[in-house]
Image (cartoon, rainbow over all chains, first blue to last red):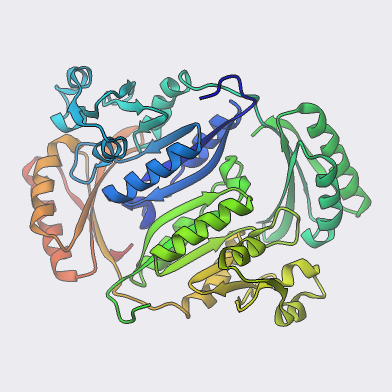
Length: 247
Length: 247
């Protein structure tokens, strides 16, 4: 991987039938996205796949070739439906083998299955429940339980290159999106270094609008933000600006 | 598509930088998943992509060939960052054209952009804010705002084949996952028609375990559930069973 880039790219792969059945709301993607934005790592894509080896293999192999980092959550427990480790080994064409270090950490509390790690992988610390995740190449495999995943990410983030943090300003108003469409496109065209998004939403039954200016250079982000605020005011909206944040 | 199947397959494609930046938590995937489970339609995969035409085109074209239905949410508004309609047209190799019916519905409130629909597409009703979604082939394109998407799905679901609803029972306990791993795998092997999942979770600071038995045939689902309850009790856990539901 090229070092000292302004930004790095990432993809998220969530493994688990429980997400796709609607039983569990995935929150890992959003949580990791927020961590990455502040580190100048851009999440380019997220996927959720079932606990099916062929599906995991295909997704991992597609994603790891197109982004700098792939974060995988879920499917590393001791039960029969936890097949992420063997699937990742298959994706990389390496053996799944008993990792002595993982075995030492696990032997008292868990079965042998959780110490089976793809050959050549490096463990990821799990200070919450002991059973480690692992890194192989640019793929980081963590637990699906959010509290455990968050703790593992403390170890993961020390291994990542960082780019320039992405800054963003949010301007909220209650103008209809159709009214701002043209002048907003005009502002966007004048600031190629920023990305301007328009997000309608319902709050308390009313349709509101968030205009979000994002970029890693503070100067154009500030200038485009000022232009958006002026535009909203000119159209008779009451712009409510949220100050610069990494988000 | 083959009709009268026991189950149909689906994929979800969420379009939007706001999800991948961590700004907005996607809830559309979970919501649609829950609707589908009751209709015998299995969500096999979900993807989130940025507002980039090439990314949308690639995802739509990969997904629509592998599942019966693709549900797309987001990116159909009037602003410059809404590029879903043109991307879907590109994916299908058809023109994006002014749809007279959409134009009639929209001309008073929105710009012309929201009436530009891929040639040959059929509109999807939007009783909340007027601007329609559209269906082309097996791809259903809806708004990203959850309240609007939910209303559009009322129209979409009348167009779907239904299979047998998926039933599930959840047994919760506080046994460690490693203890149930072997007997659970044994139960799974005896009931190939059901899918048994094991999901640890933290609640009130305690690690708990949900064992979920799913399938579309009531008989093996009930029998496997009974076996799981007996197994948990035999291991000294206090099984707390949640009755049969579609979920």
